[in-house]
Image (cartoon, rainbow, N blue to C red; front, side, top):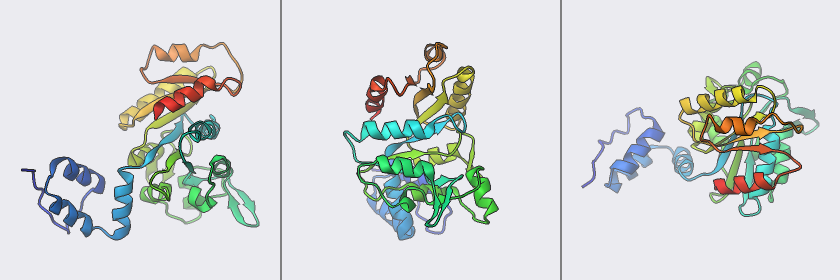
Amino acid sequence: MGVIIPFNPNMETNTESRLTIILHSVLNMEVLTLWLLSLDYRRRVLLLKSQTMKGLFISGSGTNVGKTLIASYIIKALSVKYTVVARKPIESDCIKTADGLMPKDAVLLNNLCANPEPISAVCKFRFEACVSGEKASAEQGIIVKLQDLVDAVQPINDDDFVVVEGAGGIYSPIAQQALNSDLALALKLPVVIVVKDELGAINQALLSINAAKKHKLNIVMLVLNQITPNDLGNEEALKAYTDIEVVTFNQNKIGNFNTKVMALI
């Protein structure tokens, strides 16, 4: 006999934690059905989808470390086997065009997918100012909440593999009172952290790893983005401090990178 959690439709709940408790502790499906029905239709659909969404969340040690580049190669690698869709739910520093603001990163990632989608589905919140998503939206008088970004990431087709690129680093503000770490946690997606392979990369990598672990994120890979070849030995040095998969990315030697990416899925 399962443990039955008292049902109260007026009770204020954390939907994610409550659903987890019910799914793991309650065998009485009547209780689950009643609770789900107490939610509005849109929240029911999004909540159920969030439990099964397949994908990766691409973050980094900061801005301009190569997240979009790494995300693009991840999309290329996975597209051999999966139907991949790109999501960058919020982007600043967009280009002003006759058709509206054009998000450069989101457009690039979308065009690499086998079935490109309308850019509004890939990047819902677009801003011209070259500042954090939180600041850019505030300057426009627009309130973007964490749940807005979670909703914007959901794929149209349940079977799609979603590659989500954050904005900035793990601790960069991305929505009202929300950091990139909060979005990654809310999406429940494995995280890939990108660090520029340069002097100081070990410090940046370990700081990012510790920040992600503090927020209970599932880090599956740390990518050292080697923009120019070097003999710093950061990859081997990092392996002495973490058991997370560390791989150096070099555009001229992508075979090993692709193999490591495919092994994540």
